[in-house]
Structure formats: C-alpha cells, structure tokens
Image (cartoon, rainbow, N blue to C red; front, side, top):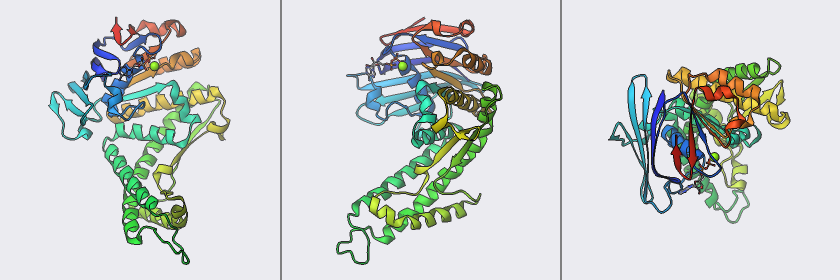
Amino acid sequence: MYLRSLHLRQFRNYLDQLVEFSAPKTILVGNNAQGKSNLLEAVELLSTLRSHRTVRDRDLIREAAAIGQISAQLERDLGTVDLAITLRNSSRRTVALNGQSLRRQLDFLGTLNIVQFSSLDLDLVRGGPEQRRNWLDSLLIQLEPVYASILQQYTHILRQRNALLRQATGVRSQVATVDNSPPASELALWDAQLAVAGTRVIRRRSRVVQRIAPLATYWHREISGSTEELVISYVPNVELQSDDPAIVQQTFLAKIQERAIAEQYQHTTLVGPHRDEVNFTINQTSARQYGSQGQQRTLVLALKLAELKLIEDVIGEPPLLLLDDVLAELDLNRQNQLLDAIQDRFQTLITTTHLGSFDAQWLNSSQVFTVKAGEVRG
Ligand SMILES: Nc1ncnc2c1ncn2[C@@H]1O[C@H](COP(=O)(O)OP(=O)(O)O)[C@@H](O)[C@H]1O
Ligand SMILES: [Mg+2]
C-alpha cells in the first residue's frame, strides 16, 4: 500500500497542509517542536484511530479551533481509498471512507496499516508490562480489527467490576460488624463476563505472540550475526492450558475464586489479561533486566522488522513504516540491516533533526521535506 497524499486541517500545529508523497521513502527534517511527529501521529490515527500520545481529541485539534481534520489518499492493490477523520471539540469524532461516513468506527480500521518505531520504543524492552501489552494490542487491532471491540468490551467489564469492588469499604469476614462487600450474586455476574471477554483477549494475544516470535527470532539472529538467540514468550495472568475457550474460562473463574479475599482487601481486580506479561530473553537471560543497551536496540529493531513481515503476510500488502527520530540512534550496522530489510518495498516516513546522521544510501530513494512551524516544504 502507498500513501499518496495527506491533508491536515487544524490538526495540532498545522493550519491547512497538503503533503504529496512520490518516493518510497520520505524524510521529514526540521528542528524540534516543528510538527514532524504530529504528521506521523496523523498517519497513526488514520491507521488505528488511536494516538500513542493522547487519548483526548481536544489535544489533536489546533488550539482555538473547534474542528480538525485528517484526510488521505491511499493506494491499495484493489484501488484508491480516501480516508477522513473529523475531530470535534464538542462532540464525537466521525470517520469516512471514500466520502461515505461510517456508522461504526470499527469499519475504518484495517485500511491503512503501519509499523511505528520511535525512540520511545526502547521502553518496550525496558519499561513495564503495560508497554508490552499495548504493543501486542496495537498489532492485533491491525491484524484483526474486531480485536478493538473485544478489548474495549473487556476494559469496560473490568472497570465496572473494579467500581463494584471499590464500593465495598468493608471486608467480608465472619466477624465483621460492617460488611459493605458487594452482593456475591452481582459480583458473580461480572466474574462470568470478565472470564468470557478475558478469554477472548488471552487467546488472541497468545496467537499473535506465536506468530510473531519466530519472525523476531529470525531477525534478531540476523542483526546479531547469529550470536544471539531471542525467545519471546507470552505469560498470561490466567494460564492458557487448552485451546478450548470453555476450559480457559473455567481456569479464569477458579483463579478469581482463589484471589477473592485479596481482591476485597485491595479493591481491585487481580485476575485477567490486564495483568499479562510478555517475556523477552536473549541467550536465556532476561533482556529487560540484563540486556545491554545494544542488545535491547537489536531486539526492538527485530520486533519492528517482524511486525512488518507479519502484517504483510496477513494483510497481503506491505504496511507503511514510520520512523520517528530513531534512525540517528541506530549505528550504521543496524541502519543498514533496516535498509536491506525494507528496500523500496515498504513506504517509509522518517523524521530527523539532521540529515547528516545517516548513511547516504538512505537519501537515494528518498524525497526530503523540511518541516517548520507547522509547514511542510519540498
Ligand atoms: N493542538 C495543538 N495546537 C497547536 N499546536 C500544537 C498542538 N499540539 C501540539 N502543538 C505544537 O506542536 C509542536 C510539537 O510538534 P511535534 O510534531 O511533536 O514536534 P517535532 O517536530 O519535534 O516532532 C509544539 O510546538 C506544540 O506546541
Ligand atoms: Mg518529534
């Protein structure tokens, strides 16, 4: 797929900017705080309807404006698609495909596919488990858009259940004089829903890890010159010992029972995929705790290359690659590995403050734009 044009109106620091792409790679060069990442963020929104920088549409709309808009023309194998997102200060955003407003936002997902790589992504290895769950979830939304609603459902049930547990100020006990614990029947209702929705999340996460792990291991081996063996494993909070969702739900409910007392003390849900982890080990050692910075970089690069391949396999067309400020952080060896892997197959948008920081090879197939105070110039 190829992003032909991107039109930003009252989006972040852009007033009205049309950007037309014509090369396999586009380099956006400019000082800090000029709008480079904002442009990539617009592409991220077109792809996932999410921004990794904010959850509030108000932040995305240009200051003092009421409405912002991102529109784009995307070439896919089957033809050209027009995408548009309209953001509003005072009401819900709306989305349109080929000029048709969509009732369900879910139908917008899956049209534009991307892999993002920013300097923040090193936190994928070093940061807490939430980062790795987010990584899996974003990938899953692209591979199977229905996952967006599965996850939303789970989060909704989790919030309701947590609210119920919070209401309970007392602790259930045989001798308690004040017992504000939620009625067992009400809680049981939420337990059942949590187990059903949670099992869906767990099964999908498990599947995507199984698919991406060998690809990442392959790339890690390539980049490290065959000296390192990366193993990625999914560590669900509720064990997945069976392919049968009914059995996973039973395990889920049994674990809720086990943790019931602890939950009433802590007033929060302790069981479920919101507590999942993904482990990365290199040569049998935890990359998070013991990996060198070089190893961690190799790992993240391997993950990104694996994402490109997995999305391409599943979708049947190469996704876009967005590199935000990250190229200059890779040494020449890793830069070249990346270049070899993407060649001209994956349309790549690259932001940087200095053109000088990367290999001249990159410039060969690139179009270069300068970004300054919310304006893009060729
Ligand atoms: N809603 C908004 N309205 C106007 N300006 C904004 C808005 N959101 C962010 N900005 C401005 O955008 C700039 C940051 O842009 P960004 O793309 O992150 O910079 P960089 O070029 O360093 O990647 C800042 O100057 C910030 O004030
Ligand atoms: Mg930036």
